[in-house]
Image 1: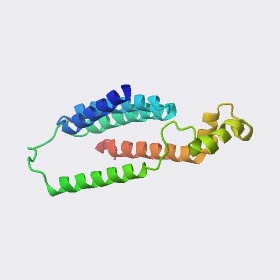
Image 2: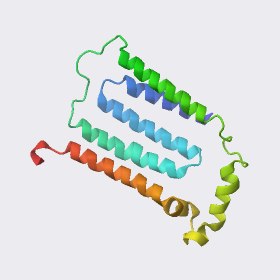
Image 3: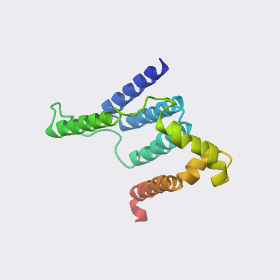
Image 4: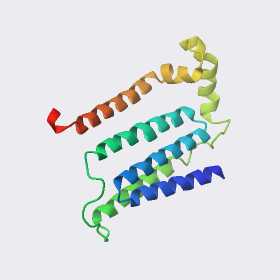
Length: 177
């Protein structure tokens, strides 16, 4: 029941963010969306992903969007077109096709929490049994993130750092250029 309630909150936040004409309100709603997603990740026992979602999605992204908004206008200009344009239909088609491909890709996945899933039979036992011997780290979650997936974690950190530098370069004042 809680999961369906969280899903309902996510859908309401997404629709509200799309419908907002005031950009600051839309940013705030997207921050709430990220916080709800952090709760969803926690409910799925992915606390590391929940922590990342809360800090990056709700924290840093919201701050960067507000900083970008300080350089632009807060609302939309002009009247909204009431008719649906070809661009809107093309965008809707791309979203629907992408959604269908993603759903198709999940059809053959094992059930959530299935103890006979390949990850639970092969990968997880190895990490639990041998991570301390192979990495010297007591916590095997830290061993997985810092050692086994070290290059992946480095790549994610590089992407976040690069995005931050790009935002700083885009938002700097013209008098500094």
